[in-house]
Amino acid sequence: MLVKEWDYAELAQKNKQYVWHPFTQMKEYIEDDPIIIAEGNGRKLRDVQGNEYWDGVSSIWLNVHGHRVQELDQAIRDQLDHIAHSTLLGMANIPAILLAEKLIGLMPQGLAKVFYSDSGATAVEIAIKMAFQYWQHKGKRKKQRFITMKEAYHGDTIGAVSVGAIDLYHEAYSSLLFSSIKAPYPYVYRSPINGSGKEQTDFFLAKLEEVLKAHHEETAALIIEPIVQGASGIIVMPDGYLRGVRELCTKYNVLMIADEVATGFGRTGHWFACDHENVTPDILTAGKGLTGGYLPVAITVATNEIYEAFLGEYEEKKTFFHGHSYTGNQLGCAVAIANLELMEKKNLILEVQQKSLYLAKELERFRQLRHVGDVRQKGFMMGLELVVNRDAKEAYDWSERIGVRVCRRARELGMLIRPLGNVIVFMPPLAATTEELDAMLQILHQAIQEVTEG
Ligand code: PMP
Image 1 (cartoon, rainbow, N blue to C red):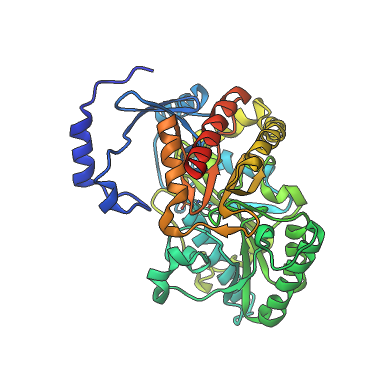
Image 2: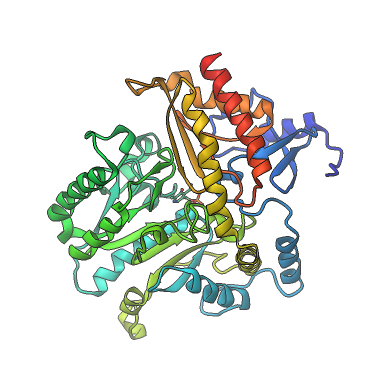
């Protein structure tokens, strides 16, 4: 990689002067030396000072093949020779049409119509409004509320936060939000009952059924992160739970929204997490990996049953009144098509399944670390929950910043990762080779050991 000579001090000063970073305490941040990325290549990033790092969180859970992938770069260049963007409001464009066709071919059976937007949060926002308006059109006007899972995360816009349930992200805005009904998520490591996976599944489904029984008449939809609840700490559901959720939603006449923003496009070892249990939700949201981590395109995909409820005469005002300036952006759709084609060409889903087995084997040695309480994995989504004491599962106090410290050490050792509280998240790009994964795991192990035992 050739890095143009940049004056680090000058850029750092401008960064401090002009940029407000997301999810970042700026007071602390501006006192530190920032990493300023200049280049990427394959699974590595390089900063302006020439340091190289493994991209251990796939640039926040979205990178698929790596950086500067020839086929994806070329797809954007080719599209640029035609047009970068024109609106999808009332007119169409070539990549948006072809991508929608391709997506429906990959989706769980029954999902039929693609609505484009530009981030996971907007995809969720759209799903909420679609589900809400669907019931209005169906004449069930009381169905206006949403059931969500405790500790769920669906993005940062007001609607998405309203169906989220992580107190830390919600507290400040609580008076702005609409209230959702919360059901307990099957967090088996800290479950109130002992018992096997099947017993856990049955227990948590029974809890969910209580909620549905009490609230189904006022509920438009249930929203869930299928198979893996991500931002709460990479928490994997027990087998059979998702299928049970689908059955309960059907039984109580509540729409099911599967938020696959984090889990979609191979991340868990299938195209979609719903595929693990042959579930078709009524609405599916996705984003992140769709463009291989290149450009912001997200989707909300609905069944024909939902789509058709919005059809009517112009005067009836049944239109879905929603859209964004960059909805259906050609550059984004073009690179998404190239990404999906490359995934198919490389048989990446099968590869992820095989490498996941390898990762599972390698993760075993993390269980020997004194302060690793739980090791969770589904495909290329991994979370290691750190605890003060393994027997009591005692959590580290927030003020100890244990996750932050481990990630800081990993950075010194050459890998960029971000924690979720006391959970160390490891989400390498799906195309990382076993040799690359070994190098990353080595850093992860050393960082955890040194910080928690050192
Ligand atoms: N839903 C889920 C399940 C997510 O994990 C995320 C982001 N991590 C979002 C929605 C929000 O996506 P975005 O950051 O693209 O708005």
